[in-house]
Every structure is written in structure tokens, then in C-alpha cells.
Image (cartoon, rainbow, N blue to C red; front, top):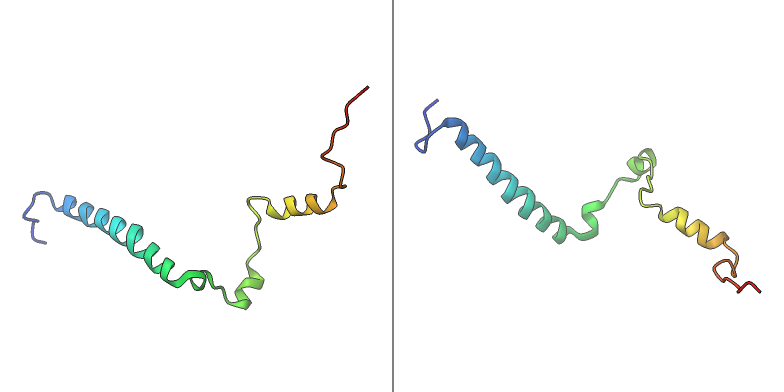
Length: 80
């Protein structure tokens, strides 16, 4: 292996990894995903049945609580 003209051989490898991380992962990948739109998140039907549907943010629970709550649950009446 020939030494890099700029100094240490390891630094050029680190520079290339840094450039790859910046150029590819921070510019090219988001741009391609923006161009693809919803197709970027497409999942085959057979795989969709296998992968569990994880509700991290609790949207299903919030919807369930809104549906089952009585209409006057959020109204407080003054105490006499």
C-alpha cells in the first residue's frame, strides 16, 4: 500500500468515511426518498403480515380512548 500524499494513511480513510457519511447519507439518501415519496416506504404484503405493527407514539390508544370516552367526560361542573 502506498502512503497517502497528505500524511497518515489512516487519516485519508477517515476522511473518505466522513465524506461518505456526509454526501451519501445526508444528501443523496434523503433526496432519493423525497423523489420516491410513499413508494420509498412500500412493503411487500407477505412481509407486512410477518412484521409486527408497533405503535410507539400511542396513536391507537389515543384513538381508542377518544372513542370510548363519554361526551361529558372533559366538562367539569362547579362545586356548590
